[in-house]
Length: 438
Ligand SMILES: Nc1nc2c(c(=O)[nH]1)N[C@H]1C(S)=C(S)[C@@H](COP(=O)(O)O)O[C@H]1N2
Ligand SMILES: [Mo]
Image 1 (tube, rainbow, N blue to C red):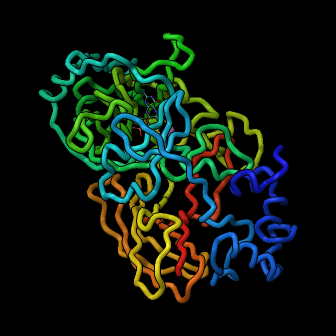
Image 2: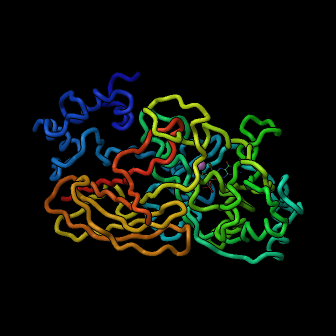
């Protein structure tokens, strides 16, 4: 346990020593839950000084919140074909995209995040790559080269959002093990390939089919070739949707190596883990697929809410399906300094798993009031939606812009981290960015 919170990031300090971090932030020791209304002037001055300016809406600032300006800013690193991604782990390689690099409506290949469970396959030759389709509920097992797929089935292009189920994990307290994603395990490129359902129907889906599982050519970290790094999948109904693809292109180019070259599954709106990379085998199953990382605690959450830190028996866990409503502010970049009286543009994207987003709101006063934004329709089903708006700040000082999306069923993003779960999945709390108005 570290003793001096000033030597670690405030986020880290708040997790490890909440009371000490709180004292550092607010100048007094307090119970975060009852702090509101008890903030002494000295505490606010300390915080204001740390931020470099006053906080005009301080009275609305929820207790226990770390200013967005203090968010950890890790150094980006070099990955061939990628730009500006922040590496969270290098074996296996996992790298996320800073929010301001996700500003494009269609995520460019260089900004698509990477989530690997094993080791990337080597010496790939797309000419003799084969996809085998089988499984106990497959009526006519078959093997296809990529050229076979292209010749036999209709080629379609769709913009599809892929978000890792663990995106946002870093905010859970107590901390959940796994990659400490902040907000960047999301992207929405345009994929080109054939419909999974065309291939499945060609091979025959048995009446007793329940699930479609995938296998990829990546290898287990431990080096044992009999073990799979990951082998997940989706229920037959999701597999047979028009938008589920077997893709070989991303934004008109070959798939980047790290994103599954030469062939991958894309089932948008569900945790990214169902979209198998380096795809070489599909199995039509007569039961829920039992591949690697299908069983709890992987990619599962408690059926009912649990107390933070609880141990949850496998029987009480359910497999994550459609992802919850979420949004991202991609412009401006967090930490920007701007002049007062400017009408300031703000924009980003919002998505809601299998559903659509019905509205996105912005707040500049820590959630006390919300302003609607202009929201676009998705390019196609399961693509994220662009939103844009502008804000005007009443006086100079420290502000945060918060974005909150609502889906078509009226479900809204929470302002604080939602239901704790053992592996830290499904954090769809509002995205917040810091702005200094001078
Ligand atoms: N074969 C294989 N497929 C995989 C993975 C993997 O490690 N191996 N990772 C999964 C997970 S957990 C996610 S979130 C997405 C990430 O896709 P990306 O790396 O292209 O962004 O791929 C999924 N498909
Ligand atoms: Mo993932």
